[in-house]
Amino acid sequence: MTSLRILVCLSFLCCSTAPVAGRDGELPFLASSKVTVPVNAAVEGLIEQEMLAGAVTLVAARGGKVIHLQAHGIHRIDRETPKMTSDRIFRIFSMTKAVTSAAALQLLEKGKYKLTDPVADFIPSFANLQVRTAPGESAPAKKTMTVEDLFRHTSGLAYNFTAPPDLVPAYNGNFWGGTLEDFCDQVAAIPLVHEPGEGWTYGVSTDVLGRLVEIWSGESLDDYLQTEFFDPLKMKNTGFYIREEMHPGRSAAMHYSTDSGLRVGEDPDGNSYRVKPTAPSGGGGLFSTASDYYQFLQMIADGGSRHGHTFLKPGTVAMMTSNRLPESIPNIHFGNEQRNGVGFGLGFSVVIGETKGWDDDAKPGEYGWGGAASTHYWVSPHDDNLIVITMEQTMPYNWNLERALKPVIYEFLRNADH
Image 1 (cartoon, rainbow, N blue to C red):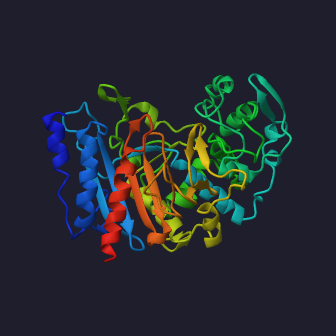
Image 2 (image 1 turned 180 degrees about the vertical axis):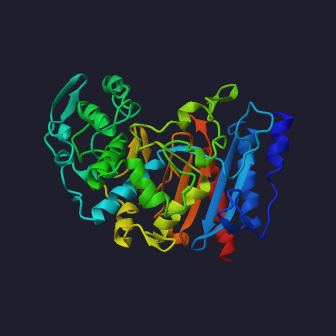
Image 3 (image 1 turned 45 degrees about the vertical axis):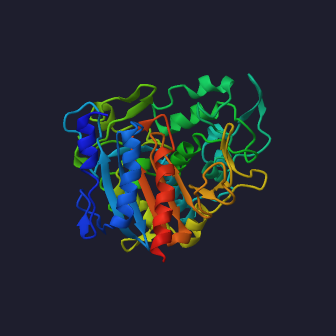
């Protein structure tokens, strides 16, 4: 590690017990050295091993009190003054899914559809789905894909990294050059990995759900999220591209882990991040900050209300944060990676049983997810709605930061209870 990186990292190990405000000036909190010191040490360990360039970490506990918001390390390894700041904007990829799911559930409450409705009732191209029966072979689907299948990833839709080899070329196609309507028509032509409701496959289901939000609301997905969630939640730095009012230049750079250390990726201040997409990805398209995403999670933790505004009913939130998988699907998985004791609700993964061998420090009832660039979050209802958010930009996806912080933070809570 260079001396510059060491000096930058060490500069962030200071901590305070006085009320302070986040760098974006909109998230006052009471910093606690009892959690900040061990969290900073854990993050610093990853930086010293060059497994991480920099990160922003946030911890809220005791019913919504933010007790830790810290920037660590650097946001770009090829710049002379690249200090990470807590207001950095990150591409959060699949952390988008919970937000899109919340929007769709808000429309459920408005009576726009039922969870048992066939997807084909709203998107005609889903009326004649095929199911893969063998490599290169398919047959008409025997079961109906419902809206609930999209929420919980039991639709049979996949990604290129979760599809069987013979379907990978189809999922490598260019889906994003047109509209979300075009996207859905293309996806509907790909054979399903399994019959709807008979398996769990992580894939583009939430992107299809994003198109349904447009159909049910009569608005574009980005406009609906902006009006119904981002504005009332005061999420000023969240969107499907970096708008001028988000002050371009605050984006954290993408980094790639290699055998020789970290390598910086594309310039986050380039034009590709600043162009409004014609097909906003409800499954992975959002940019956000730790402070902004906290506002969304605190709303969920509070039962669907925040800042005097009701977004969802408590019963609807309960459907998001409890397991909705059938008994025939005991846990979620990514190929051979069996996430023991983890189910899925209408928007979040949920710890429902013994997680030894997968996530030894997880607690029953935890719900959360992450994003492709190794961003993470989890909420523990049994710890007075503990909320933890970790923001970084490291590819390929890894669990390093969550696994380093989870035991540290739960140890802090155990000590605080005595």
